[in-house]
Length: 314
Ligand code: NDP
Ligand code: OXD
Image (cartoon, rainbow, N blue to C red):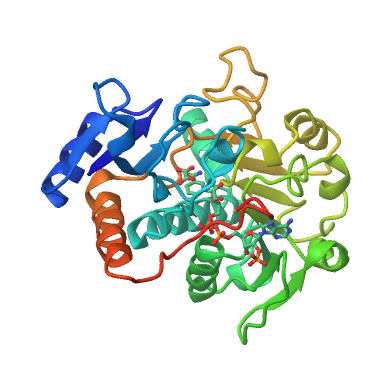
């Protein structure tokens, strides 16, 4: 029985080593190794080349090494077997660190004081609002959105959430679907997007949406923090919204084309903070462990956790 490590853009070797240690009774191969396609029962994937997973006649399940499966679902030759996305405590905790860090950086005007330090300027206009005065709206209230919400709430931010299907939480005001979007936006000072890229979310973070965010809040304008997927945002609209004061500032971890073009105007914009798609990184140690346990449980008749619903794209 073979497990295929089908990865591009990351080094497959640490993954191959981890799976070999955790599943010593299987053959673990990468796309570069010679292997018998009929022997492959499982594939673990991150952006595999299109078509590379076709013709695996005995494939039982596919595991994504990331939480987002948009790149996999874009392959028209993806085999029609159960597709499992990763749900991992470490990955989730790393995303919450990122969200909390950047909400606090905007709240406490981190870039302004860094700039003042570089200029040797001692200047304080007493304009620091407190967390309880700034409402954070989390778009995408799934595994990561809910964990980030808990941690933001603990700091004192009032948190609101927006999801596709209706949800009820005692601690957060919740909104769902297109019908819930207007009120959600109108009550949001800091918009955090942790949405997956699907046909419904592509291009959603655009100028029209930004213009419906709460105006006149204590940050001096709405702020965007986006760590979902680049295809959800319209980058020209982010720049335009910053230029005409529809947005005050933004933090972006994901981009429509990655790596970001060295000539992109996003790099040098003074109101933008950019990171290289590393808000939460999949590490072989914890994720391979998680997938190996799922394979063992599946083979013992258990249910797979984190099954993707292909009809909605996540
Ligand atoms: P989940 O599937 O647990 O959550 C997705 C959330 O988005 C759900 O609340 C879902 O609603 C909501 N959603 C989906 N479509 C819509 C829609 N059309 N309208 C409103 N809400 C919608 O995913 P995770 O929280 O685990 O991960 C979220 C995303 O984060 C991943 O898909 C990936 O793209 C990104 N990511 C980025 C990383 C990075 O380093 N930048 C690292 C890891 C993940 P509902 O609850 O109703 O289903
Ligand atoms: C993911 C990612 O989807 O790292 O897990 O972007």
